[in-house]
Length: 420
Ligand code: ADP
Ligand code: ASP
Ligand code: MG
Image (tube, rainbow, N blue to C red; front, side, top):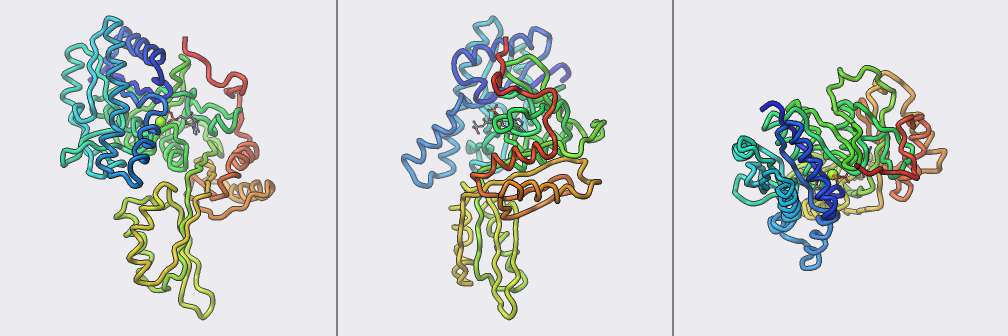
């Protein structure tokens, strides 16, 4: 369907009535330019956080199916309200839940994956000259339950719909002007990237740049969707995610990313026999716990017991403990957890052909007196686990050391301009 655009607005961009009306006006003006418009909205402001807190007030470990019933309501509210505002501007809008929009997922509650998009109803709405609004972050499972797609999942809804309707572009409207060389909230003079390659964006999202959910970038790469990440408050163009061959001048380092939600799990006294690492990681995979870095220390001479440490998202510690309980009891292993961990990473396709980048990262952190607890690398990324309270210092130091600031810098005194 040519001339179709998907516009996704994040939580801050629809936080209150005035912002919903402003988003509605922007959607309508896109329609009046001639495009057929599919809109994906997030829950308003901090609504998802409020719903999670409400669940934890009534239950220590809320049932994941019921959690999805609860969390999916936030985006429905945004869509219905925005449809009303669009109708008042003289256009015809229809809001749909993820299920009504034909988004079919697996059964993994609270972090479901999209399996299929049956977009007939969206297409029919567009044919009837309607603006179609779809509640982000949700779908319906193969067993007909409501599911959600994990935090930040509306980005993935938007990309999946863009692929399904063959949209020219998937526009992600957010509260910053695009993808920056570091989180502009931590590095005020971070540089906006006009273009970023899929490979780099995947590494950035995977290492904490929440501006685009990791799965949305994977989906866009696999389905050839053009993502344009831009400000919902300004009209200027933002960042376009492109295949690597479209990057003409590849800098050494593109961005510094960080995450503050890491936990380290240490298994003490693991038998040093073949197969144990496989059993531990399989148990975690079955419980859908995402392991990041793994280190195994060889037993000291003569001993037969090793230590194994790995990092996971800190909100998955309880699940990890549960998943490992039987292995712990079988081998009398001690499980220690520390959820005061953070991670800083540098990402850049240019580092592939340049030695010495790792040395500069470690020296820079060392000069700041920041202790590196764990390290992992890919051909275009170097990540260090550091104490969570040192993360901002580490990000700023690395951003300065690799001279990533630039002319498109956001000034701290005027962080996020308003869209007229
Ligand atoms: P939305 O509600 O629109 O989906 P998010 O909060 O999910 O917005 O993502 C936007 C936020 O991502 C920004 O406010 C910014 O603080 C954060 N962020 C982290 N890293 C980056 C980066 N490299 N570039 C831009 N924003 C980033
Ligand atoms: N509302 C969900 C969240 O806060 C999904 C999203 O905004 O993308 O994570
Ligand atoms: Mg988001």
